[in-house]
Structures are given as C-alpha cells and as structure tokens.
Amino acid sequence: MYKDLGGSDYIGAMIRLRTTDNYERNRTYINQFFLEDRDADDDGIFDVVDTDEMVVSDGFSDGTTTGIIIERGDQNLVITDATNPAEGVVIAAYGGTEKARVSFCGNSKSSLKSGRVMTATCGSVKVNVINGTVEIEFMADDGRIATVNLTEGNGLLFDPTTFVIAAPENNSESVVIVMDGAEITIEPGGSSNEKRVEIDIKPGSYPNSINLKSKGVVSVAVLTTDNFNAGDVDPNTVDFANASPVRWTIEDVDGDNDLDTLYKFKTQDLILDENSTEANLKGETFEGTSIEGSDTVKIVPGGKAKDKK
Image (cartoon, helix red, strand yellow):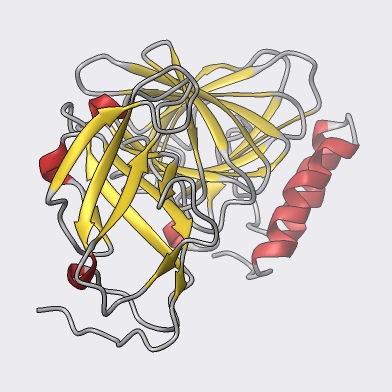
C-alpha cells in the first residue's frame, strides 16, 4: 500500500525524480516514499497499475483509467495511482531530452518533456497538469481532434461523445485549445460549447440606469466582434435577467461598420433588485453553441425587488 504523504509531498517527490540521472538512485529514492518493490519489472509502470507487472510492458490500468506508453524517447517514465482516487493515474517524465508520448482513455494522448507531471482520469476524460507544460491531444468518438498546451495549475474535462471540453472553475488561467483547426479560448468555469460575447446594456448610456418600476423597455445589444457574429444568435433562445425579448432589430449599434443585434426587454419582466450591479444575457447560436455576456447596471433608487413568476 501507499505510504500516504498527502498531495503536495507526493507531487514534490515526483518532480524531484528529475534531479538525478542515475535510475537506480531514483528508484531507491521513490521507493522509500511510496511502495516497496512497487515496480518489479523496472518498466516505470508501478505494480499497482501495471497490466503485466512481471514483464517489461507499456500498458497500465487502475481499473478505471487505462492507457499505454506509445513512445518513451529517452525519458524515464513513472506511472502510478494518484493518492486521491478521483485524480486517476499520475504520469511523470524525467531525465531525458526527447518527448515521451502516452495514450490514455482511448484516443487521448499526451507528450511530456523532462520534469512534466500530470494526472489522467477516464470516464469523461479529466487531465490536470501538476508541473510544467504538457501537450495534450483529445480525439472524439467521431474522429475530431482537439489539441492544447496545458500549463501547470490547469485542468480540462473532455467528453469524447459530444466533443465538448470544459475548464474547472479553479483553473489558474484561460486555456487556448485548437478544435477542428480553430482556436477557442476557454475561461475558468467555461467550456468549448459556451462562448463569451460582448453586450451593451442601454447603448450610448452610462451608467446603465434601470428603474424597475418603469413600464417601458430596456435595450440590450449583442455586438459583432472580430471572432463573433451577433447574427448567429437565435433570438428565440435569448434570455436577459430571466426575461425574453419582445422584439429585436439588426443594426450597427456601436458604429464600427458591422451589424449587431439590438434586443428590447420589458423592464417589469426583469428579475433584478435594488442590489443588482450586473446583468447577464444568455442564449444559443443557431448551431447550438451557448453564449453569455454581461454588463453593469445601476438600479434607480426606489426600484422594487421582484419575485420570478
């Protein structure tokens, strides 16, 4: 069984593997922290996940997360169970100059240089990079491919059935992914099936004051930008502060010579209150991609809180 070091000590031990060139010295070091004689065949795949622990081989499995070493290069690889079962399998490379390539969870792949450490979990594929930058390739069931250089402190969730990639909320930064040849930026907490868009509440007005007692309408523009066409949004899916638009027009709202979409919402349909400082617009494109945008609001004193009907 593992000698439980806790997450940080475990990762620290893995990273320190690359500080020496002598394999036997490394084995002695790591064995004192984890399992006694845990890699009986010295293939870098610890017995706890080795599919053939008595013969040098390339396959590994913890019962849920499976994979195979495609190419070792000149790296020493360490593949073992994570101390946290939810993190699946730890994959680490050290000591070489060439990249090692590892396939996991079917058709997903990673390329690791020396000192790179990651975890992989199958099901909906989950990866986390613990040290360095790791090149990841995801392949969907229908053959579509996504690639990313995932940096330390970031993770991703990949669904091979829907070809959707999501970023955990605790990611340290946005992640740029190439999907079907196009770059997509995913913010922490977002996904490839969601797109942040620019909106402008009450265009030409600041602050964006709203009197919730008004019987009029509030205008909200979805703006066309270099990487988004406002006309791609299906107006029938648009929701602003839990209200649906009563009408919309196509026009150049911001004077940049492209066409935006200006929506009108009944003020008394908005689910806002006197403490609201921001309002969100959500919807979908005609192709089914979720969109979301936000802008500041200032509720006029005396505005009355409303309960959603």
